[in-house]
View 1 (cartoon, rainbow, N blue to C red):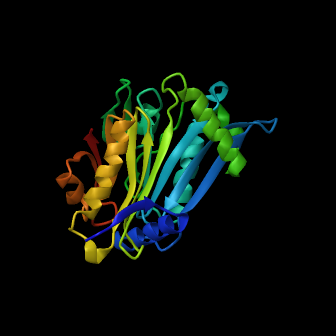
View 2 (view 1 turned 120 degrees about the vertical axis):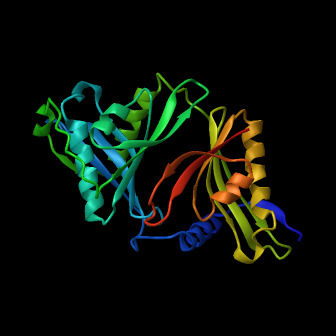
View 3 (view 1 turned 135 degrees about the vertical axis):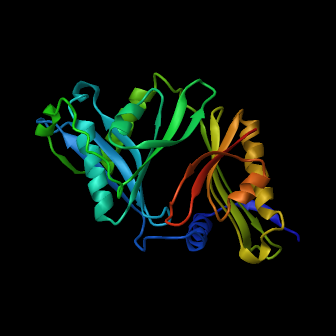
Length: 287
């Protein structure tokens, strides 16, 4: 079959997301929704908060993207207060799992005290280790009460986009001492047939010199098992290699993990019973 590679449009990316959403098992019928939480001091200054998302196609799961507390207010129970509110909202939305990522220089012990367990680890080229953690909200987990709860005099409330920026800036400032800034190169490509119709697409990000990530890979059903997905995967790997990236990462479910395994990807962790009745995996490939 003749095809050519072109850039994805915004509409193409939306189409791919919709088609993947139709393929994977689902537990929720609601749309994906981001929410921001914030904590302000008596002067109205943001001293902590988080960014999280409840994903329709991530199977009754809330992904906690960032959680930050100002250094002046740490060890006062504020982080615990924010985390409990995330879990409350997750239950309210019908989610049964919260997942998050952290690093060896960050807050793994904090999350473990709250009943989170590690399901993947990855040692980076800079020597730091990244972790993925999970908590099943329907499990019988004892509630952790911090020794110092003086931060409870403040209140957790819903935040805005500008509040999310404050949280992101706080995380970035803290991480600068451990992780150098990297250039982010987007790789958004599609294969089109002779009539210009999309037949496959990939959405990936290359963090120059650090790692690359395959966010989405899709091939139209009648054209699967013909090497089209592998063609796009190899193109993303080539770009990563050209930019000094030693490793490429991705997620998969038990319905498509064999594709990545056949292309040389190795399991680095397994999340069981997510979505319910299935397993999902984090994979990597050294390039």
